[in-house]
Image 1: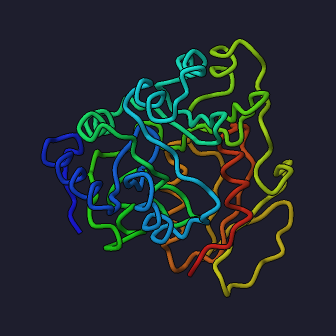
Image 2 (image 1 turned 180 degrees about the horizontal axis):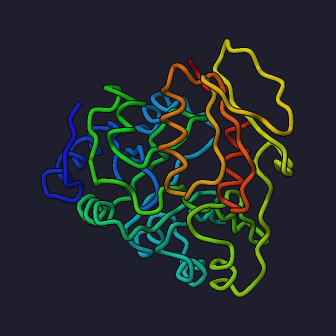
Length: 280
């Protein structure tokens, strides 16, 4: 395993290019969270295995320009609508069922110009656990299973991209770094925001995640937090994942209490993690 910084240096791009054409994955920075990527096609199996991601969930194509998206997917008829949204922190699911992003991050731009192909990728974290905003945190999670980590420092947004489904009426499947209002302004129409996967919302209630093997506590509406318990209230978006990982890695923390925030993105992510059991 190697860590190379800065991520957009010729050395970093060269090493990533070598792994890309050798069919091996690597971790890289974006504006949102760190990604785990490879060459589209057969090499994707390694990404699924390292992350533990279900094979039914396709990887997103990361591109440096809209021209590369159109050329690779043959989406000439969709160029105008994509131009209104991209580049930006939004993962657009096209009529072909493929998610695409166009980045302004210097590594993605330099890398895709060099290889002249999209990068197939997902977030660089174990499936169902929080994403990472630093290369160091990603390495602590995925370890030596990934041969190369490109260190671009802390990510700009600290939260995932918004997932926008354009197959039919526009729908936001996952709120993220691009707010619904910005998408509606770009498209000139109202966009539906779907509830978190699993249905419903926290609705003002307390959600928790617990370590496997730990007792699930019965919590009253008002809780006094003591030793061995972590409590998450309202955090800045960029602080959510570092705080979650700190709690997950702390062996004294048995469970974490989520108090529903007003922020749509934090509400969505907190609901997601309150439905999942954290591995010990």
